[in-house]
Length: 126
Image 1 (cartoon, rainbow, N blue to C red):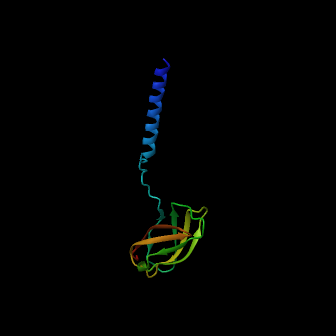
Image 2 (cartoon, rainbow, N blue to C red):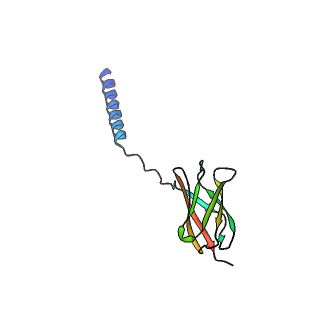
Image 3 (cartoon, rainbow, N blue to C red):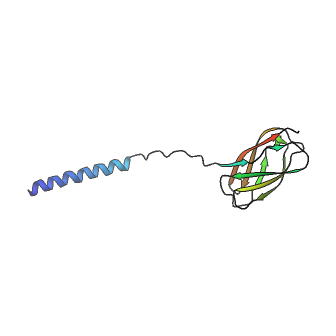
């Protein structure tokens, strides 16, 4: 009976070693790809008109440092200031759209190593 017990334990031990070895060689399951890019969402379209205007922007990731804002140069929209709201995700841009070109234009808010991108819609003058 001792020989049967030893043989059974050897079989179990050998199986455990083989199973552990195959687990070490196993490739981990692929993780789903998620969009980790920070996005900027503009609350309202920006009309072409004289005078300073306020644009409200919400970003998907907190910006702990004071950001700078750029709107595509071809838009002719000039950003004069960026003000942080009550939290680190809401911002107010003061802009001059008096010479702006209607269309959809790239917006980038940059704070440190983080850049949030979105789109500003400029509507034609009324």
